[in-house]
Image (cartoon, rainbow, N blue to C red; front, side, top):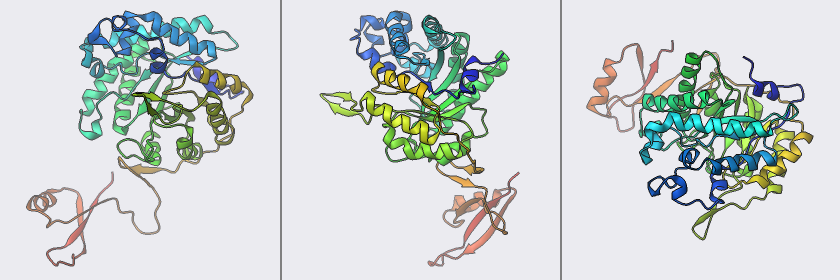
Length: 388
């Protein structure tokens, strides 16, 4: 079955696709009470609203669709059993994700026309536990994502978005879970990954954008881009890198600027016009094809984007992907001169008794004396591990 979303994305017109704005920001404007969430114990669990007050979620969807959004996201950002478990709702993960997708599809159908089709993206957030930091093991996270993916898939989502990603291992767990569900269902959906680069220029765990691309390039993605954390000004260099090197369609879904604490609440200063001007530059000069808004953006922001989108033509990109290996932090391009390429790590074998013992037990490893430390207390070695 051909994806209607991909048909639209890759049509000869190369249209700029506009995503919706912030779900949480819009829900907050409705002044919901604890009763709306189903009781004080569930207050703040936006995902549970699709069960306790679905009209509140429907209003958010309708407001963004009325503003002109091509894609709305499901109310499932924290929809894994791991996050829902904080509200004793872990056993509702599948049903809540399925209900959220069905609700979004129902509202999208009210606005969809042949000339302007509307789509539903199944939202998959980062959760509250990152595997790189040891909060959770990879398999447990993958299994939690698998349950969420199945609910979104069965609810009719047109595509899946793994968003606000803070850890590349978290992304890989989500993507592996997605692929397992696709294998079970016998049909894939389009997949979008949106990473979050902090103010310091890396992901939360320290990953640079070049390493992100090196790690994700082998996956069958359709869209790769950025969202959250900052406004578009802080995203430009990362978007430029993806524009020049990524083989995937590039997306940019910024916050309405950096959040400021005003009266104990987060306040975002970027106006709809400022967001429009920044993303117009990204589309025309950097080739971005998918735009939208994250934290602090409202229907007014999306309306500005939707009005300008039909007049824009994304710059024709000619990306050159430099093949590379990557650690959790950096990418190492496969470039070498006429000598052999050293891949490994430096180790002082006499640094401790355990280090020396472990080094002698390694199989298939070559140890080469490099230099003797100035203290004269023992040689330093380079560990060269064969690549298969």
